[in-house]
Image (cartoon, rainbow, N blue to C red):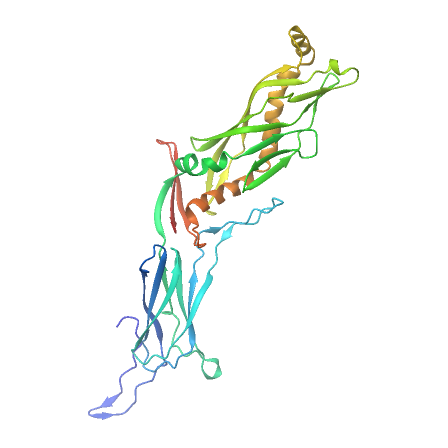
Length: 374
């Protein structure tokens, strides 16, 4: 039989035996490994390992048959409260269960079973016992391991995923823009990450203009060619920019916006080696109709003197791009965790991996091929 060690025949001269066959030690092998769905369940499996002693000596028992869960793909680091990033690294084998090895005679078989939860890539590995002097009671280790792969292979279009599965999460984004305190400006994606920054005031002809207490009221996300666009609408009930300076307050009226929308456009790339999506630098666009908190012709005069209104949109775009640009590594991590939680991790902690990503020009779609537990 293939893979079985055979003792050499006895040497003979005519009808006279002149030598005895060499006795090989026991040689345990995992002859087969299979799986069946446990009756009455949808995600519990019975893994069955058939062991055979292919040596010509009995195996006395002892040692273990161990079950491991393979760490396929890349294990993402956690998102910490302070925002530090770990290193994305290949997942490691994780021990799950083990059972004692029984005694098995020459060419005899034994069957051991494990019950597991969910689909994963499982490894069965024999660890034979040792005899006197620490010698393994097993001829060789080349047949001591089998893999049972329950992962499913499939693909999805990233644009459809973003528009359907992740849109509700992305549209929970909350933004506050406020230059009146230290790091009072933030972008908050509930349950994932909160980024803070500072927006400095800007000056025009001795007047100081400070953005204050602008809160988002809604957010909309859409997939665009190989990228995404997140647009946020803000409340504009009060003065959005406060003017101050020497002399009477009337000389430095506040600035209002009757509508204020911030849109962020970013490209999506992919690192095949790390199995990791990368978000490109954001491009911000601010749309707002600004006016001084005065009446009529005075707006024209103030704008002609200061030019403040013409600068606000551009300044806000620069501030947002600068603040978010430095945070794109952590936002890329958040993005990858969203995708992993949707397709590559199940409720039992079983993980899959991305097999490949293609950027399809005709459909303008990012197509993700993967194997996973779902």
